[in-house]
Length: 155
Image 1 (tube, rainbow, N blue to C red):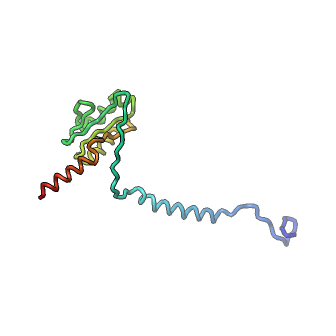
Image 2 (image 1 turned 120 degrees about the vertical axis):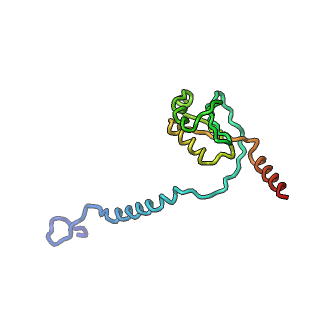
Image 3 (image 1 turned 135 degrees about the vertical axis):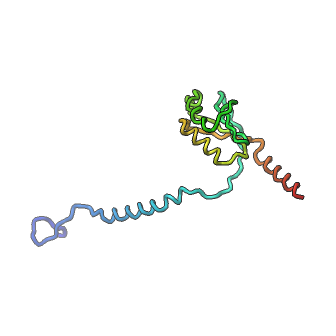
């Protein structure tokens, strides 16, 4: 007679339902925590990225290269393109639309915002893969040489 049944009027009735109220409370608290911390996670943290020396990737076929020079002029291959026409030119470029990829070659002195604007235009044109081209020979040596020259000029 340890367990009650529905037969007796004075006995206890067994509860066959699970009480989910504590679980809902815990889930709501976790939801609030994630809602508060999610915007903090999206913000970047300032870090000094290491310089990597990598071997050049050999390509069997010709890839579409978009270049930005130090004067902020934009070129698709060898042809110069105006900034306001870039998205249209990329959207109508058969090679870019077939491969859905593009390689970006930007001068070191070009502001980061200009590079981001060009990458956004490429994305709006339907290009989902954007690779960055670097100069492996100029890596850390050229920047250190420039720093040495600057120090010697101060003397």
